[in-house]
Length: 282
Image (cartoon, rainbow, N blue to C red; front, side, top):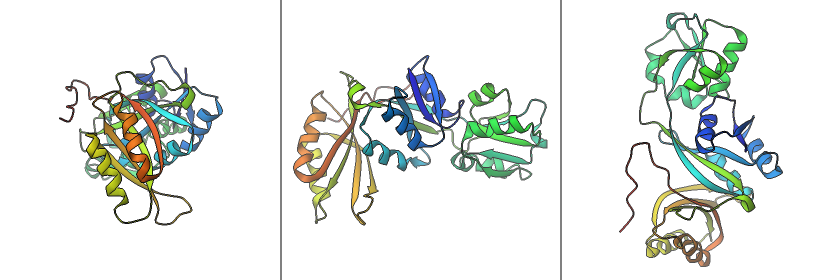
């Protein structure tokens, strides 16, 4: 199976993709829009995208892309994010004066960088791409913040491991496929939906009240502006499901209150390694 990711080989998206589909061929893309174009165009079988991070929040562009393409979420994964200071073999921490990485990764390692004032941080387009860059440049005074997989992939070494400020750092990834190809897990207990409501008082409350009456447990809500329609919004929600048909009923009860409802995917809720199954609402 060919899976598109945004970013370079060795990135966290690469790691997530190989955990979701063992033995997959990874097809790196420069931009998220390119990932969805490759999927929609049929040059890849699936895509793996980050949808939210436990510290940095949601990847908002990906909500828009899920809505605007004929795709469905098939599976989700929670990946523990471990940042490392990476450099060329033979370099030492004390010699590093420039550190490259994605802005989110740099922000998640503020304490480490503050403790090493010699190191000046530079934003880069991708964590793994920053490792690839320093290896290509053969720069012994440059470092990168990225995954252990990136160090191994590009032949660099880890100088300092686990340098993130907060160990409770997880990213939630979606495995996305074209709608006709997407399978629905018979044991699915979670649904992602997008909907818009009429611009009148109480419309959003009425829609959410219908989900509450159904007994569906709302676990996430996100709003995004409708392009070309100022002050109108698309709402994205995740709900836990207690029964196989509850996702269908959720769509049915929302429809009378909404100008648009789209099911983005129905899948099994991901769990952290070693955790107990999530409790279902009574």
